[in-house]
Image 1 (tube, rainbow, N blue to C red):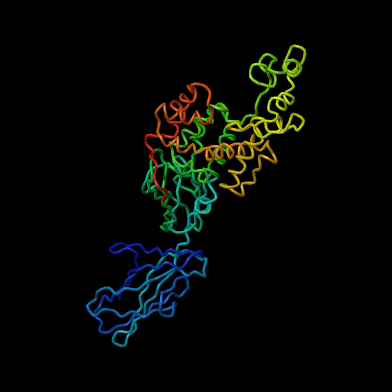
Image 2: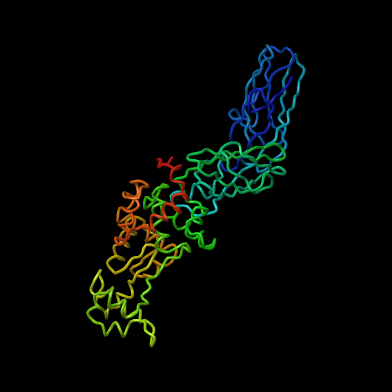
Length: 445
């Protein structure tokens, strides 16, 4: 009698996957009698208890052997209660003509598993799927050029990694750990990566690469070209945490958004606080209060005799307008301009806080109670996105990439000027960074 165990017809692959975190997967196997047998029954068992036979008693199974010597089917599975991996033995016993016949086949019980962890924060809705992937043939989305760390556990000996489909790059092709970098310019590209250990156990993990998903740090580094990597990482993480809430969820919208932001704050990527370091003449020229009170302009403005009193300037210039109280209230100074897209005045701070509370509750950011939250990277990015949402700028951004479209977005941010710098930042920086032409808007999978 002969036993053959395999999980793919016409192949010799005797590896049984064993996973303690899910139901035992069944592996189709087959057995046949190599000598003529009439009405023979084979009783299959596993002496060391590390595999089971689905159905029957789970510990043994009886299989009827065809009289013509063809194959009879049965199934095996890993024993979920055992963490042991390695070689196991299947025994078959059969009585033919009163004489017992015994056959054995060796199998390898595999405990190989892959976990993955993205190297940047994703939005709360996606984090459970993307941060810790341990299920067999698990699927999750990656942004273009996003990096995900892969770890093989339960391996029997050394592990080799290979990309089966979809492109991209691995930082190492052998070892327990590697990092996968998703390919560029691929939309909804399926990626399959396989780990194989020294015993031949195999495990596959899958991803979908989607250019409309989380933004890669490499993209933000192109926008904020002089920012240190730590700041790039923080900006990226903040954007990825909130972008779905505010609908800045495709390459065109992102290019418009970051073109405006880099124009506002520069290539260093720091949110800004309003600078009120004006001379008396400049105060008179730009603020109605100081035009009517030139003596105060002389007292508060920067001169050779004294620096500018910026707190007094803010309190007087912004008193009794944009939701502020009088000069004595201190609102002008408390709610002076801040952020990636500058907010000024109590009323504007409150309006954006209302948008944050309505669209992204639980953020922990309150720019009315703590206005300086708008000059932190996370708070500044959140307030800029809330400003974008409240003013329906996605609608303007969806118009396209023509000068008129860029001007339309720019006018909502800043109604003054011809917006030449904003057009330049879109054309030369943001549009190529997000590969707008190669990344059309698609529905999320």
